[in-house]
Image (tube, rainbow, N blue to C red; front, side):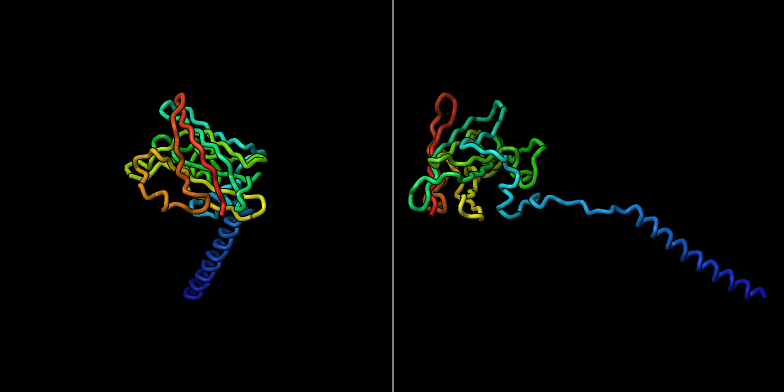
Length: 214
């Protein structure tokens, strides 16, 4: 009799554990979110180039203004014309650019989204006018800290009759002591060498770069 009572008690205890486990799992499932939180597909340093153009303003002019109020920064203005393969001016081309600050860092303001979380606050867009002209008003970037990398501005283009954007050679500066002498030939890719001859006028670096597409 005692043995059968022990068996009954053991079975009851096993059933009770099973019931409690099911109720616990049910309680957990009730507290799980009913929808999946969507992540930013462009919030990654290795995403597709299309992400350069995701967060741009709806209305663009031919002038890109990248603000910087730091007293140690040097103002820089680069203008030029983008040309088609047939050497005609190319209107409505979207130019995206980003670069480091005066310390050589991709500093952030904290409100960057998507790809710009990696490119930092010194970025912007513009669209060439009917004559293919563009203008960038920004600051002169510095080399990466503790390196001999040339000063540069990364850039990409999105042309109106092609859905696939592409990078062009970086904007670089002829007077940069870190710019190798053979850089002119080494970087003659899409958009030309990218080397800009800048001169300082009234405290502002002024340069011109015409971009010739192949």
